[in-house]
Image (cartoon, rainbow, N blue to C red; front, side, top):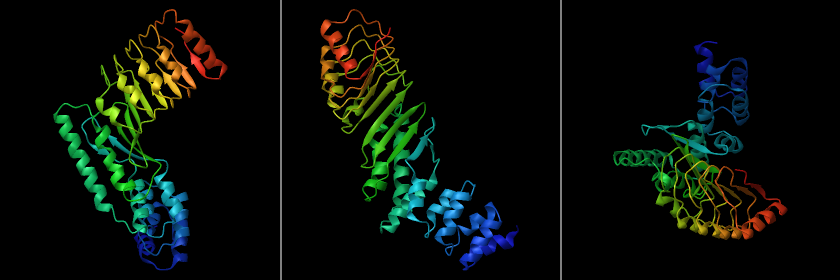
Length: 306
């Protein structure tokens, strides 16, 4: 392969010749073919399946002839952003953003500038929070605008978007721009950030290995919660308000300092998994023991080993 084949792949209007070139030659020609507006859909699909180069997804995503199923495949199950400890963004999949932009353009919506604007706004916000010695938890609210402004407000729904922060911190945003999952690990906090209780659509709250000492009564206001994981913290009690979480399917408080559990937990009608192991639980009240027995009969997995 030489520069002549690359040039031909980038400029020829003959679709059969383009296909011949990409099949015969490797990465260099395939990349150039994806820059050729005359490259037909079936050739793009072949390159997408057979090609193996880092810019493939981005080039395929930007091509005007790329079939919509391929664009959706590039978007996949999520769009991920990574945030380093210094506050810099890393974009593991620009291809996913390009695919999303292409789909929106086909609907007559041009959001290319909006992507850059919202990224810049979010970076600025993070930098400000770092100057205030904020650990990034406040991003729970502000980061929703990133994908909400790009996808939801533009009328296209991706399965979900997530912003991952170090160490081991993550947020998941649903297609409607609402935060559905919060995962905080190793953050060393005595109590939960108040921002969390503003997340009306929150379904999964995971706080582990964070020295959490107090779970406030406001936890009972998160009525959409399906999973509450608070393992390996320093909790002394579970607030009675947890019993209001009728949609909760999994409650895990392993490795805390609980000596008893409130009878109000009997209100957890949807519970499928209950883990209380590795707590200094004393003799539980008969009503709680009876409830645990009922859970087991109803095929709820109960782990209460010390």
